[in-house]
Image (tube, rainbow, N blue to C red; front, side, top):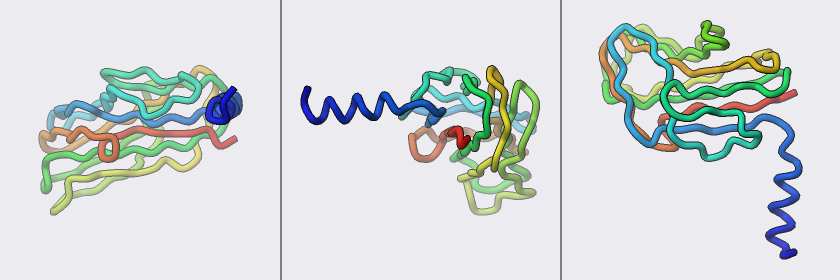
Length: 151
């Protein structure tokens, strides 16, 4: 076995905790004043295969534990009323990761959850709300949903 193959095998064998990074490779339209789940069509990584890609992408925990989540939406609107980035667990709002009353001058909106306790089988989705119609800009570094189990 080559050194590179041994290193890859060693890293794969150690993947015992959730760790994922999903992103949009196609833009998504968001209706005004309606929260919608983020669509993610691609993954940079999903160490335990716990994510479902596509419309309303989601992470489903295989193990109970404490998790943290991160997300960002880069929209095309640079001004307007409220924007909110939510974390939903099992279809119910759990954390407002970021919220603003107005968005003068900025299209990028990102946030993190802090610790979130999950049971095995719980599913998590990132939702975005804009007071006016918005369209996300696709890209692995600007419109994304990621997370990891910390313990």
